[in-house]
Image (cartoon, rainbow, N blue to C red; front, side, top):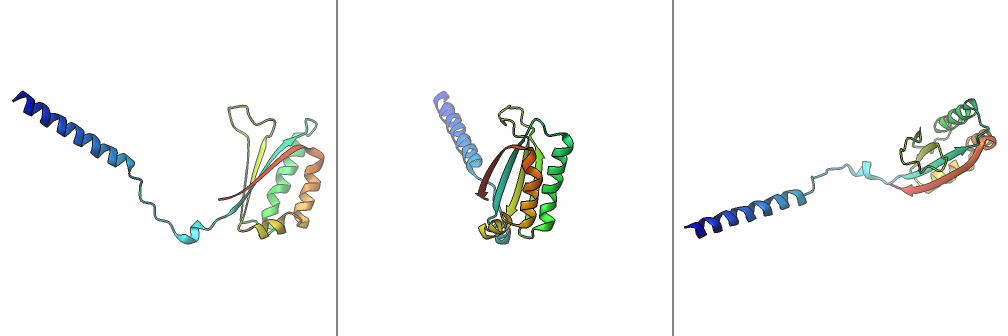
Length: 137
């Protein structure tokens, strides 16, 4: 009797573990609109400012960059922020800007665009270093 009970208990335990495993292996069903899934080109720009740059100088750069989306129609989205990482690995880069394009052709219009060039003129006297990474999302 004890052996039958032990076998029954073990069988139930194994079955319940298998069921739990299957539940955790399942991924939630995600429905998406194919139009929302179009790839976008992300243009990530990080700035390290000169120590001699004042808060007013940096604010001028932030404002000038922020005007570009209204001046360059190829920019589909724009956001920016200040480094907030507790890791201390930013190597002096304090500002991150993310500019989104629909295509490499749109980025090709943006880079030499007169408004972008004017922005670079505002930025250049205060820029110690820049890092740019582009990727498809």
